[in-house]
Amino acid sequence: MTDTIKLKMAITRSGITKKKVAEKLGLSDMGLYKKINNASEFKASEISVLQEMLHLTQLERDNIFFATNVDCKSTKTLIP
Image (tube, helix red, strand yellow):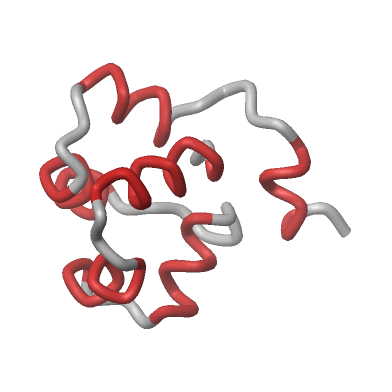
């Protein structure tokens, strides 16, 4: 599960807009929104691109994209 808060912080820190991130991944703005908010999952190839774009270490990548303990508030779109 993606840690939404950490990913948003990494994108902000990079100075790259979410629109540019979506374009680089070949996603629509809504497609990226869904992935960031855990309504759908990132592909391994997308994670690799994001790691390079956002200059993430392997530990940062793992903490963002393979989080096992994510605050429910950051995944509210999944809760009915």
